[in-house]
Length: 308
Image (cartoon, rainbow, N blue to C red; front, side):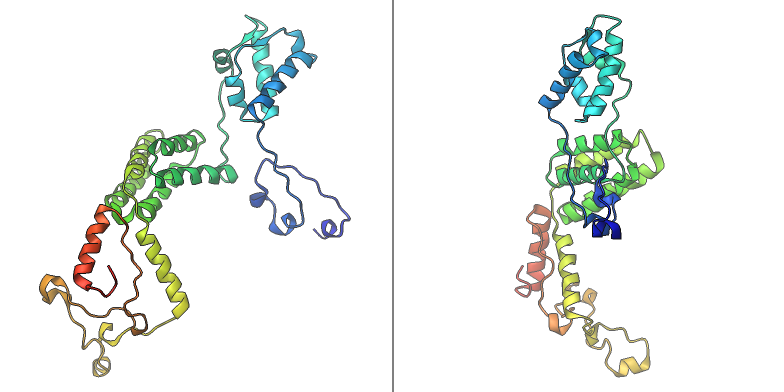
C-alpha cells in the first residue's frame, strides 16, 4: 500500500465483485474505480453478428441467427459468456439446419446459470429489491425477486429471516397477524427445506405484500433510542420502583404506585416516564384501520396528554 501511495507501483486490477466488499478500504481510497456495466441489447447483437462473419472458425460454419433473445438472456450482458454460448450452439447448428432460434439455444445450453452471488453486491441488490417490493405492496415484483433468489441458490432461512424482520418493521400493528405468519414461515422453512419451502415463502411474501403497512413501531423505537442517547440515565420515578427491602419501603419506593387492574377499565392515569420527559410522545399510530382503533383508545384514556 505504501508503494501505491508513493507512486512506486501503478496498480491496475479487475474484479467481477464489488470492490467495496473485496478490497480493503485503505487501498480502495487510494484508487480510481471504474464501473464496467452490462452491454446493451444492440451491442450484444452486434458482437454476435461480427463473430459469425469475422471469426475464422465461426464464419466457416455458415450459420444464421434467426432469433437473438435466448442468446442475450443467457449471456446476462457479458460478451465473453455470449461468445462461449454462441460457439456451443454454432457447433450444434452446423450439423443440422444451420439456423439458431430461441428453442434451439434452450435445447443445447443445458443450464441457464442465474447470476447471483450469495455474499457480494448482487446478493444485496436483489434482497433490497425484494424487501422494497413487499414494502411497496407489489406481490408480483416480490414473488419475482423471491424466484431470483431461489433459482440462485439462496439459503431459505435467510429469506425467512428477512420476512420476519419486515413483518414487524413494515407491517407492524397495521396487521399483527403478519408477524405470526412470518414466524410460522421461519419455523416451517427450518423443518421442511427445499424445494417445498418455496411454496411457504411465496404464501408469506404475497400475504405481507398485500397487507396494510405501518412502520410506527419501528419509528417509535428509533425515537426512543435517540432520546436515551440524548438524555442519558434519567432516574426511575419512585412510584415505579420495587421495594423488596425495608429500607426501600422507608424511602417511599413504590408507595404512590396505582395498580391499574383495580380501577375501572383496568386503567388509571399516572406518569410512567421520568419527570424530565413527561408527556413526550414516541409512538404515533399509523394511518390504517387497525391503528386508528389504537389511536382512539389511547385518546380516550390519555385525553390530551399525548395529543392522540
